[in-house]
Image 1 (cartoon, rainbow, N blue to C red):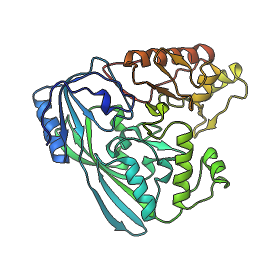
Image 2: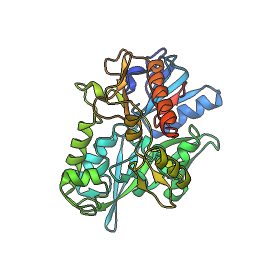
Image 3: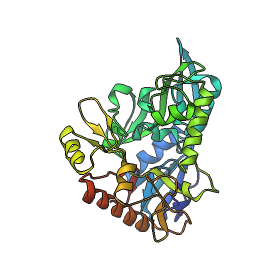
Length: 349
């Protein structure tokens, strides 16, 4: 267990480079330390923030008036189950390093989520996904500490409440502390079916085809780099929290109203008649192009969905003002309310 420190600036622990100081800060290097630290803080009724990779987080400029526990647990257990490999991965492991290992080993199922920043422990909370894959397709079990019941639980995937960028863990954010995630991946040198049109076009294959794992990973990384979505100290557009808004899913009636405002708008049909609309298109059509700037913060020059702190000189207040301007502009033009994807701590839209 690391030393308990006071007044540590949290901005360097987030990909946005935003956030004030923590009243107290400590690193947990094992799952047992993580449970002990959080359980002890709960007994003392000390406010606690569990910090992972900081890649999906907007922290207040005031910081956090309590204990920040940074997850640093490591370890990957590997076993065989028929034609699948089962990986039990500690929450503090780097997600993209796990994807890279899976591709190198010939384990299929997470290759299209290459380049996503952050730690393994965050993946089930957000039901992380990209380019036609999300973790709910491969998660077998999530080990959590239930802070209400004060017990460690192994929750099978069906109990995790997975939906688009959502889960039972996000619905009751703060209750469940993810300790480890178990994934079941196919033993195969080829990817799952390519189901995302942009990725299929980059690979030069029809939708539904399978490609070598390494080819899928490299194509995804190329696409993400082109959007400033792969962390790179030399690229100011990567000083972001990734996609700031989720793609709205509209009931059929709401989609019909949008059709009147924007005939022929781009969409993906979803089961049950609802329609998913690309938030990036809504933002651009509402008058917010790539590179749109408000003081020291801006929309990425590469990808309309990312809000960035390119010089590092912005504040969380600056970023949220930009986010509100974009959200309100889209609502006024299209009648659609965008919802933030990053977790907000000490602040809100």
